[in-house]
Image 1: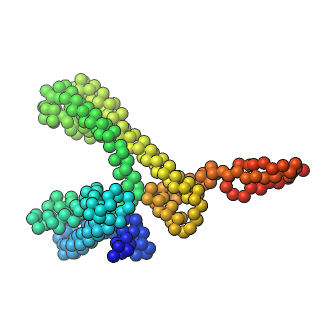
Image 2: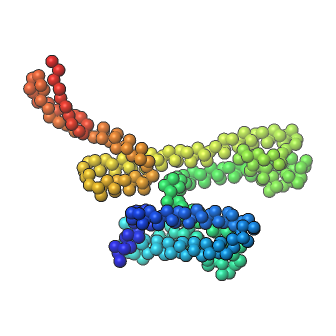
Image 3: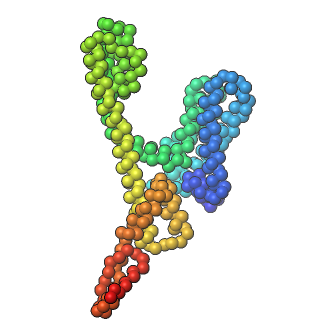
Length: 328
């Protein structure tokens, strides 16, 4: 039973298991994408009425598959060797509060809520759309994005806090300047918040604009200020992506160096190294470059004999064959 549980773990969590494992994972990805498309097209009343029976059947099939997947993932949680807990129960409880497990639980909520609410409620459709986030489990790029957001969350929070403060200040300023002239748009600070938001974020719909000279001058200052503020989150995320990629490359470099140092060329060791590369989201080209650079950096010292004086000396060179030729 433990062997079978480990096999299921290798399929669902490590995305292995040969042809069967790949088929299961691709089927789950296809089902997730299909669920998102169904929710989108189901918002068209004619489509929903025409294929109502097929849509209900598809929904029950999806709920059954996602429910079975959720139960299996809880069951195989003890196979996670990276968990700090040793108890199977604690490992399962710890898994149940992870973000991906919560998304899996939300994916099957429509079945539970459908007993109490009308199945056409907008909230149920929104919950079903959350199933799209399940695909992040199969995308290394999405995992990278989530890791960057997690690491940069304090900086991003500070940035958005400053942006929110500026929006309130901008709304207050335009209310004082334009409130008497345009009471419907700027008669209060809450009313002016819409203009302040679209202006500071550099969107500028143009549906609400200042008409006085003072209001236009103030709006120009806010627009210029918004250029720098809107660029801050993008710059933080770009820097975070770069740092995270470098961190993962360094981590992969460590594994490659250990692999070369041990000299283990068994198929199992090669597969383990490739699995590490996939887990870290390192491209095949980057992995080959790291291996090449490490092979050049790893140098050995060999004793050679001078062909002229026949004296021995040591030469430091990259790992491989050292060839010494005599030039007359």
